[in-house]
Image (cartoon, rainbow, N blue to C red):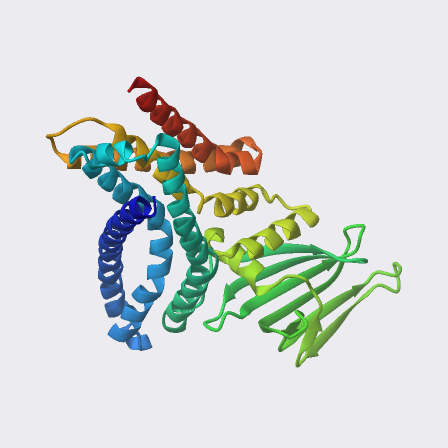
Length: 368
């Protein structure tokens, strides 16, 4: 079995690597063409060819993370169909490779692909994508969304805060900040404005300079507004840079743990976290889609044909993979609109396709 396992694993790894490199080269070409168009627009800001190449290189881990499951599907289908066409899989079956042992062999290989996908999605891709955005912001302006930026809320013991961050600087620090403080009855207590803030070691924000206005509403005659112009002001908060990035950038570029913390922060402050809960569970289940892809590929090894074009079967597998991703996105949008259970919304496509592939696999085995 070690020899058989080494044969199957080696062929699938080579095929998946070839497909992933082909897709990655295509995406890099598209990114490079897009950046060449950006060069002429930002040449006066110092954005040069080496910066464009570095930006494209930093996007590669994100592309690889997105392409790994579909590459696993295409590569494994190609190997399984080739084994069936050359009768190698029939010989392996006569040598003791039963259906469940074959499934177990692919599942063992699936652990490797799951680990690689998790590594890229949770560590390499978030870091490289953030560096790419900061590099782009350094030469092309601030990182922002829309005209108003991001709004965040936080509840503390005696106050509630509504925080507006217009943009992130090229170093990842919040800029153009407005902090509205309310008491527990909803009355405005203070408004703090600052063009820049830094994150301190204890997680607080150090704003500088600061235009702060405190509303003293003690009575009708004694009410007044205190205006302070400070060089700096420290604000203790649990809002982190990752939370601001999640509000300004796409949440699927965050680490799973950071996304979980931001999701809990939204729920604790009475904000709708449905979108981020679905994205969190999609991050959890996405590496497991490599297992689903290998399960989809296994029935191709039990097809009987000696002549014909393998490309037709590979094309059918690609269509199955594309439909999986379409269903995954559709379930995400529908779950957000219909307020479905987030974990079920994220896991449903994988469960459906796993059951279909296992049913097809069982039907082919029992038929023979």
